[in-house]
Image (cartoon, rainbow over all chains, first blue to last red; front, side, top):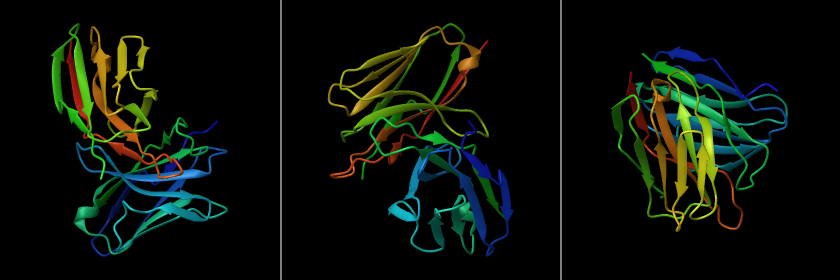
Length: 115
Length: 115
């Protein structure tokens, strides 16, 4: 059973370009969470999605950032007009349901570098 | 806003020593999880504690959840160089009438065990 897949693993963008980060949850998981990690810091929640629905986007900046989880295909985190401060590791996690003890399985992350 | 204060931030010890990492909050969490993260990888779940006062053991690792479900500790006995890594605690929030898995992470503890 394949784990959570994220691609690309490393992404380099120049200021003003767009970044698209993809996350394929584990098979059978319909809940996806995106987190951002700055160097030597813990992870910060960004957004929680179920298929075709955004459940909670309270941790996501209101401008330039968007997320989707379509009926078919991976979840996408999109950052428009990137700035140097967007440089970070972005992790997604998936779980089968939203029960309290359901484990979130994390992907390997996408390291975004903005030049 | 829920916060988790994790301490110490850095820990450098010799092989064979014992250590304790603390995770404290003024908020109550439905569950608390401990992760270990290797450089360049995503967090890997070590344990989930759900009940106040709960103690779980995983080989040389002992995890405790405070009675009030606001704090937790990770104790490692006879540390080994293979224990070196970033340790993260994360609390799972109550989402109003519907609990969901939004995780609040501590800042992390970077543990280095010298041979």
